Amino acid sequence: MIRLGCVALAFISPLCAASGQQVRGAVVDATGAAIGGASVRLLRSDSEEMAHTTADASGKFQLESVGSDSYVLKAWQRGFRSRRVPVVVRSETEAIDLGDIRLDVAGCDAPGVICDWFGEAPPPDPVVSRNDLRVQMDCMLAFTMGKAFCPGETKGPRQTDADVRLSQDQDGVYLTAMNGASLAAPNLPRGDCRDAYPKESKIRIDGLGLGDDICLYTHDRHWSHVFLTDEVSRGSRQIAVWQITRKR
Image (cartoon, rainbow, N blue to C red; front, top):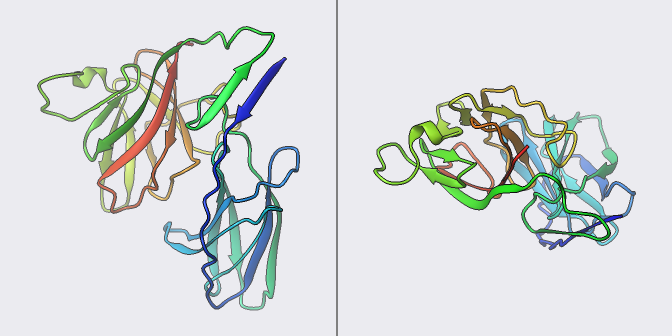
């Protein structure tokens, strides 16, 4: 029998009200139980935050939109993976009820999660590296080594050790795979990368943040699970991630 325990911390933020139609719903886990204290944000398509609130103890929330437009509602709580729900507000709409928004457990790779095994051996995939990493624009990440480095540095990893480069242009912020590595976009079907099929050479990450995760197949054939631990915007000059790399 495997028991997985998740340590969750609630972050309290005030309701940001504005004129427009009301958007409401409830944040729940996979069993349908309420996730109190979940963060709920209403974003424009360009990731600009329009409203935010915190789910109450019963998981329920309500907030106001900002006029007729297309939005994305993002719900997240520590120990869970974020979920994004498209919301279209029209002028004739009085209120939008999104119903239950289910968050899946982030899994044992996630930051702030404690997993205990009883009666069975630990997972068969040994950890190669795990680390909190902070990388500046135009620098690189070598996940098997658990290190971040920049071009021109005389010590540490070489460019041939890197798996991804952080870059930015007028359209957004990107992670670009290097040396044969490949990426899987966020919103993966499971929390442990087992069902991920990394095939992307470049993904855009501005507008992503807490609760968003990416799977990466490293250049030296390991699986790395990468969690963004800061919100990323077009103006970001650096990003912070938690990564755990396993030998598979």
